[in-house]
Amino acid sequence: MSHEDSGFLDRTFAEQQAPLLRYATRLLSGDADRARDVVQDVFVKLMGQPVEAVEGHTVEWLFTVCRHRALDVLRKEGRMKRFGEGEAERVTTGEPRPGRELEAAEMRAALLAMIEHLPPNQQEVVRLKFQNGFSYKEISNITSLSVGNVGFLIHTAVARLRTEFTTQRL
Image (cartoon, rainbow, N blue to C red; front, side, top):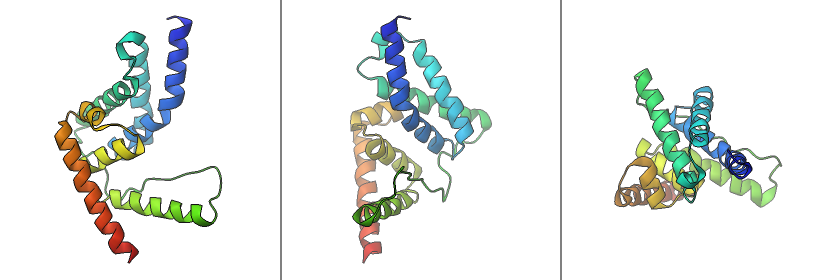
């Protein structure tokens, strides 16, 4: 491995470890220990890849491998339940949020709680899109769903969230 490859791996690890841990934890029903093991496996696998093989789509590659590895773990355990009922996504910050920022944080927490009530396939694509910033094509590659199906799931989820959010705010 060259120094350039080492820098690539260091940057990739620093930038993607936290998002991958969040994603794996969600797929593994909130089990952070198993998620860390999965993410570690993903980065070990990345170290075995030539940089040229993943360059230009590294994040998509990482999330795809992470998803496959997490689902393998679930299959081995005989549990295909991807998302636990009633688990709350935690929003953390290093600084307190006064005034309007507090209101925005509360709104975000309410939306995250509403996401918990979506069907698991909608939860997954919404999180990949809005928490991780993936395109429909990237989500399609990660989940093995068609781009059209990804679009439909996101559209349906967003429409439902908009309706529920509007109803709760009134």
